[in-house]
Every structure is written in C-alpha cells, then in structure tokens.
Image: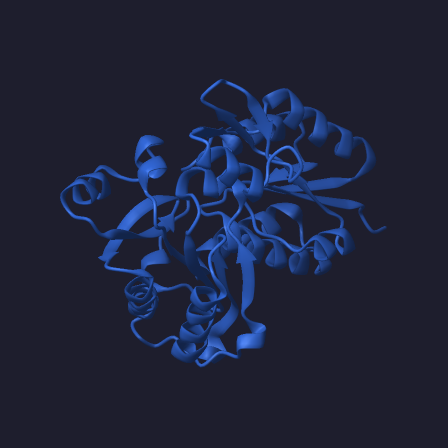
Length: 299
C-alpha cells in the first residue's frame, strides 16, 4: 500500500508556488521581530520583501528567529494525523534553532516524522527538495531517504554577496574574520554558506564579486566542473535593476556553458533579506558528485 506523504520546507527556502502545490509541499514561516518587539510571521502576507524594504527605509531594524515551537508542533502534528510520513527541510542547523526544535518533535514521533539536517538555505534547500521528491518516488525507506538528502548537501555550493552588511554584522551571521576585514576596508564580502556563513573573499563591486564567486565554485571542483555534471544551477537577487540581474545570468551561463533558460532565477528569501538587505545576490550549483571541500561527514 502506498504511504501518504507530506513535505514541509520553511521560509528560508526559495520555491515555485505551483511546484509546491503540485507536489503537496507546504511552507512553515520563520519569524522576524523589529526594534519595537513586534513579531512578524514570514508568510508572504504579514512580511515580504516590499514590507521589509519599506520598514528598513523608515529606520526599522529586524532580528530573525525560528518558528514558535507551539506553532511548529501544531503544524507537524496536524499533518501526522492525516499522513503516514512527514518530511521537513529547515534552514541550516548552523544558522537557526529551527532544526533543534524540529528534532524534539521528531523524537516524539519515531518512524513518522523525519527532519533533514540542512547545512544551507535558499536555492540549496530548493534543490534538496527536488532530490527528496525524487527519492520518495523510489519507495525507499524514510531513513535512507533522509541520509541521501543530507548527503546531497555535499553536492551543493552556495556563495553570495550583498551591498549592505550592517545587519549581518549586528546579527552575528558572519564570522569574526569577516567583521575585522569589513571594518578595515570598504569592500564587499563574498560569503560561502556552508552550515554557517564563512568568508570566501572580498570584491570591489558586483561584477568583481560574480567573477570571484564563479572562480571559487570552479576551484571547489578542482576546475573540472562541466555542464554535464550540473543537475541544477540558480541565481538569486533582491530588488535591483534588470541590467545587474542580466549580467549575473549571462556570466553564469557563459562560465559553466549552461543554457540560460535552464538557470533558476529566484528572489532572496525575506528571512535572509532581513540580514543582507536590498541588493543581495548569489549563485548555487547542485552537481552529480560532491566537490572536494564537501567530502566530509555530516554530524
């Protein structure tokens, strides 16, 4: 008998609404709170990029947090009443307590609720979602599916940069090394998202940043990355002019010999924009084989 399966992601992930609807995937919103301690659900209605940018322009500041535990429990347990198996892909366990909260719920529902230990967010989580859906169709055991999804993070590579790093510094979302350099030099950081944000270089402008991000990705694969090895490739951006977006798209397509029409284009998730602000951009690639730095144990 086929098991009824439900999938959840959280709002740190990029996604296509029609794809989610078609595959019975729902989004669990993370939370934001402003300087007046007003709490917003990152659900696209109470909070979205336009609302966030307007509030920031008016001088408001935001902190982010996991989904309230009670709301998370209710959402998962309601799904468990209806479905045989429930999967959840949260934001990286190194960036939020979301995974730890979900693990507590998982312990209360062994064999039914499964949390994937993410080491990323945004496009990487969307690519892992594709992997999860494909594995479910193979009818493998849930524990095996979870392990393969966690291993698949070793096949993803995510770099980003932003025009305004003030909230990343204030929120502790970057390492001490980045903080020191930012204070010394008026440059923009290039950040590798691998469990936590890690310094991966500096740039003079977005053209320089994209060139260096592409170079970093190639180095991660010992300069042997070919278009045949790429399963998914995407860029994300956040409210800047089309010329900038087109430059990123054209640069990525040319560098990896990958058709532009196959490159996913996504907005940066609102929960990420609370730290990177308007002007953030990045590249994520998912490949058939892990790159050299990802051949490590996921603990």
